[in-house]
Image (cartoon, rainbow, N blue to C red; front, side, top):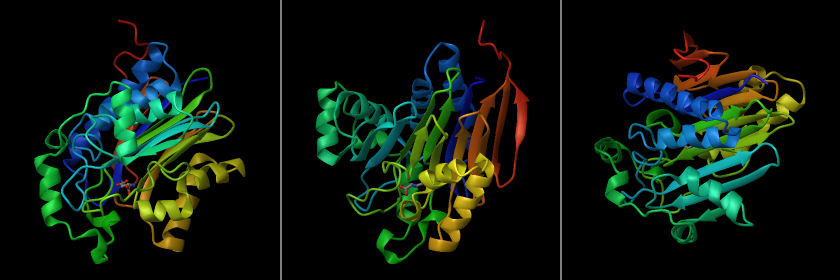
Length: 312
Ligand code: ASP
């Protein structure tokens, strides 16, 4: 099987530092691809790509996360293993650098699928994950966005106007295994304890070796109502290509619940797509020695990899 890595850096009207955002997703896709070249699994590669983006302060995940109504960071993440449908999620977790790694530990070390809030923090501690300060997760930009954004309960549709930058990755490895990983700080000025689509299985992400893998971004409340990632996979089960399935599901979300967002998808045979019904979504893909990337609606650039085999 030809391996494929697709990543996104969030859907929205305007991207924070568009050029940097485009660069960051390319680097993350290459980081995931590198893990595959070193013999890592789809799961390892998806986690590595998302860690790369969580550590980059321009995205709304890990450091750089959107701030809630109290100016604090509460993060959501989900990882799904397409081999077994095993999944792990954390919701409204605080003071850790990489929620995606904690979600993988939930999947691999507990009998549960999702841990939230204080329970997630307690588990992180038990797993030896270092607690970081609230300040280390805030950035000048996230504070500026908090100051200029209306309150979550004031009726604003934040999917179009607020900072985007949720991050996600879907990966197919050479064994034919699929994985999906997604991580976010959520929505600016969200209520304390608000949990979005990201850690909800089949909403923020999904992966099934029998069909494909997806990772979503956009207005979480809308994504949850239509279970966006599972809807895309359902359309593929019914015979649609990833591109048709993504278009159909995004159109349904828009007409049914006025939902705006985007999704990246890989099929079990390695067909892939990156689609949004917002103006922008930064994405990047590595397949067959070519790096594909774009951010504006319909934009698609390519460049050959400098070192496609990974051998130095
Ligand atoms: N889906 C995320 C949430 O609602 C936000 C985003 O993707 O921009 O929490």
